[in-house]
Image 1: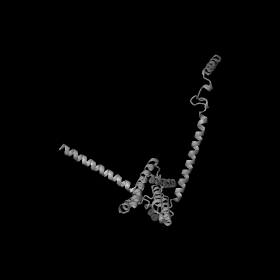
Image 2: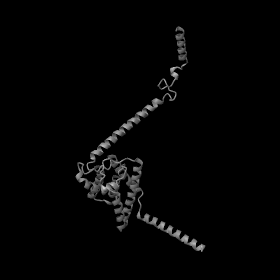
Image 3: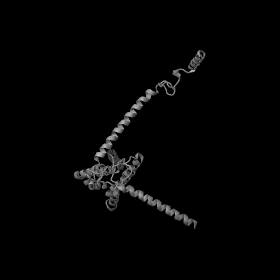
Image 4: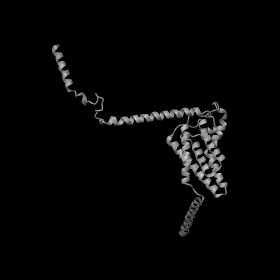
Length: 268
């Protein structure tokens, strides 16, 4: 028994002696001396991780406030809401900011007017509405933010005309664009200015009262529409320029047709 115990002890000591030191084994110590990371890597990554966490916490806090405020403002989301009695009136205000009546009315006004200045204004307004529609659609496709869950699915118009994505609000963008366009180009009295600004504010508010959008959707839409008018002013299309472009296109088509007829006559 004594000889066997002594042999076991010697084997155990020999095994212990063959093991590497603890400072050379990366799996036994978790310190900054790990060979997979440089010595100053953890100290450099620590401020980045802290700033990233602070940013995420702030963003989540702001989104929570946005969600809470949007729910509180959706008082006309359905007939059973606290202000469900004025829902038809709010929906009428919402319809006044839709793109379809604005495009139809602008094109009709441009065709029916005889003054070149009025036709020029309506032409640029129509182009601005088309640019706004395309830009809002691109941003919605990129962001892909879902609409609020509180919606009245029984509305026939809501089923066909409400889009899937929420950010930004196209009604708010269109209202800000048209309001600034009218205030700069067409409106010259104080009463009309108040009416235009009030209409834009009511259209934007209707999106929140009906729970169609979040508060950030409407805010960004207003800022986007306001900034779009600067692009409209820079790319203003005059009536003479439009006539020249149309004349050049017509002349180019006539030249193509005449060249084709000449080639056919030459082959005959």
